[in-house]
Image 1 (tube, rainbow, N blue to C red):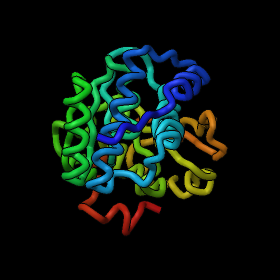
Image 2: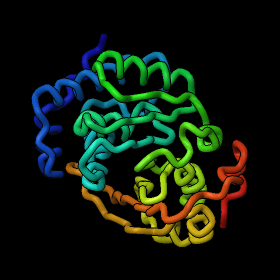
Image 3: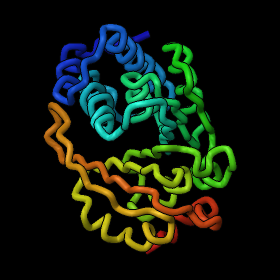
Image 4: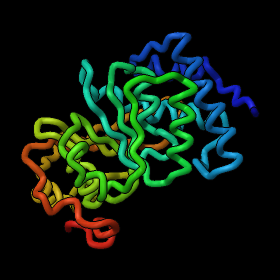
Amino acid sequence: MPHAKIDIDLLAAGAREMHLDLTRAQLDQFARYADLLIDWNLRFNLTSIVDPRDIVIKHFLDSLSVVRLIPPGPIKLIDVGAGAGLPGLPIKLVRPEIALTLLEATRKKCDFLKAVIDDLQLAEVQIVNARAEEAGRQEEHREQYDIAIARGVAEMPTLLEYLLPFVKVGGFAVAQKSREVLPDVQHAERALTTLGGRLSDIVPVSVPELNEARYLVVVAKIDHTPEKYPRRTGVPAKKPLL
């Protein structure tokens, strides 16, 4: 297997800037995760980011920027559109008490996620091979999570329809965004009202060694999502709640 040889010192230093002290065992897990990512990416298109330095900064540290928002304790978190496991798996590596669900529609990506989980021997992680529109209607997932999170896979009105059906009242959703978010959030007012959400905060984050703007859009779940949402597969993207 090609060895990623990621810069462990860079990862450790970047994590410390985020007030996270990674143990040697955790650093070894991140290194192994990177190895698997590069190896699998030779066969399947998991990510366009495969340079070892970029993996540390744009995948791992960017994912860890969310940890500041996660309260202590054994919460339930779902990563919607998990892809190669980001941000869910890095969060799990530093907060092992979290019960993590990785929701991913592509079968081969789910196979990769299983390989990582098995290799790192991670407990309390489940993989769900489904679209958000499908899983969000299933009793075992609907309004069952303290936190739903996604990297910016869609515009906010669409993303909220993917995320909020999973969140229990009193929990919250987090959208990681990599550009100016105010216009996007402003367009989401109807989606917030309709889906039972309320904008709680827009948190600018600084990812070490990354000279790009990053934001965490935090949405509190204040009421139940009506049964008609999420709508059928493809509709939230084609006809967002504007």
